[in-house]
Length: 492
Image 1 (cartoon, rainbow, N blue to C red):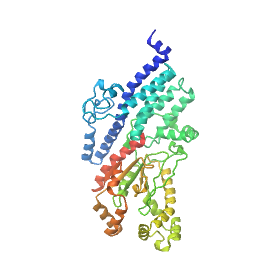
Image 2 (tube, rainbow, N blue to C red):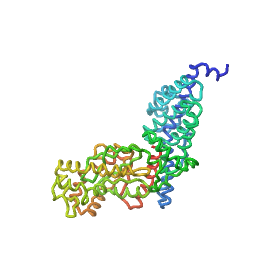
Image 3 (cartoon, rainbow, N blue to C red):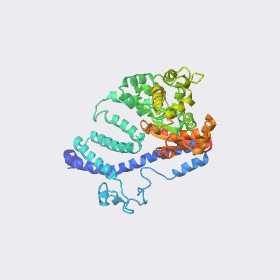
Image 4 (cartoon, helix red, strand yellow):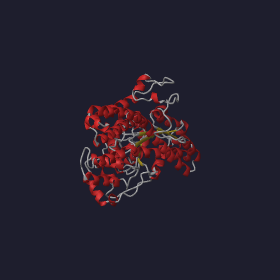
């Protein structure tokens, strides 16, 4: 009896073989989980270096390239201990067994090894054994194994980095559709092949940062596939698709004209259920929460240069929601907020031109917490509504939300994929605010003291831009972050 016949006829034997293969694959999955996000980051750094060289930022580009000079992929360099650099030998890499034999420590420096490694290997082996027993030696078994192993890798990568790399998700989607063409889990036949052609072609137009898969998922989630089908029938790309996947993230620029059949608009019910911060006299608001999209919360102390940094991102194609600007517009003459402010606080808080008297209001809310809450009750619903509208209408690959008092809100990470802090030396803050507002030094110091400390803000940051130099130095920091955010939005 041949080995194939044994595996076909003996479910237990097949399960054991699949389990052993699963353990080996689990060991490789650990490599994928660790290295694939780093490979993406290195790719983004290389693209950022290209852009910096175009801007004559040669020295900054050189430093970026120096960090990615060594060849790095799933096969090279050889795995080693991150603590002492000890090269892991074959007998130290036997799934689960080596971890138990080494008692969870490096053979050289005795540093602890994360429990995640044997856990991933064990889960991979157990799932493989079950799939082998459940499906037998069939095409469905092979598809289920690939699906299970891919989900393991995606789950852990998502937990670690909030990334879902296209290098896994897109092949998995297409492979799943192909497996089900004639056999597999859902025999959809010709209808599925039409769907595959259409979804592939959808990715060829209005991609704006590689959100093709996300658009498809969102449309499906909100039961809008009928609209996608109608759009596909009207769109020539569905009939003759095809493109080179190796697109450049840095080629994405301000939003192109939108068409009635753009798949970007198919989410149907983007959900905004929180609000955003307004000016410094409107603290303690939470962030805008989206059902889709990549959101960067930009914050910093007064006078740090948040607006300048935000405009640099916007100039490269990022969406921009400036809650400070929204608050200004809401408290301009003849706006609904003014009537409410006058009714609650009296005419002395409205300037001669009919707008909010910010100086008077600032003094009041600093001295009277109840007055601040009343002002928030007037402005926050209006800020929420306008912020929601701007984000809903944005077609950018990611959105930067400028929130002056993000950390003061009490829930700075709610709705934020990244938090970017603009930082500068305190004396630079003071001089900038005095120059633009005419406030005294004591007044500026009082405002700074009312905000969270510089150290606390930096501790909570995912990314930091230092604004102590000229505009060129600021742009040299923004460009790599922009490329990274495009990559994170694409793979998030």
